[in-house]
Length: 224
Image 1 (tube, one colour):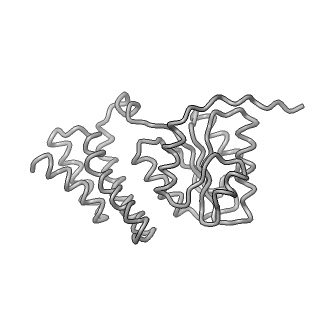
Image 2 (cartoon, rainbow, N blue to C red):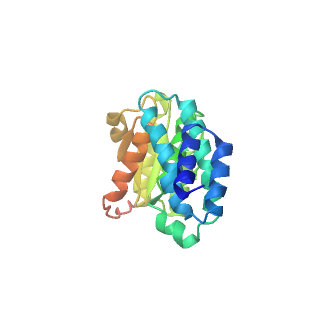
């Protein structure tokens, strides 16, 4: 197969939500000496982007996740051959991701994880039912650029505020994006977040937008 054929196969494996084909095509790419990062960007990622575009219109969340699984299976094969220096060069930022304490709805969170990683954002996934302090500890430990918060329960909006306040008190050089079904932009900003997104693809767009803007290191708040 030609290079173009393999890249097309990678792309279509994601569109077709076929993890086995994605893995096989990734191995074919390596055997054909195709640069792994190119195979991701011009093969797998193009497929995921197409599914994302459809997601905004007709694709169901479960289909989006299955397509993301196919993408990730191919990426795992290719990433094993990417050097640490190359991986660092490809990385656009670091993000801590999780669902707030008291909430176990993680479907949207998982979609955000896959799409962020596809865009070159390193994700530290804390899972669901995550204490506010854990978001902050992980952000400090990883020197994160972003904290991505999800909740599907209106009663837990104060958790967004708690995380935002803790980040400011710690003087973290980080942006916060909040999302989830009932979260609106007005609520997210009122709770102290820097951005909001209704869907996973929009969360990626907002993350990239915030990463491109310079951020002055905040002054740590001292409490007497």
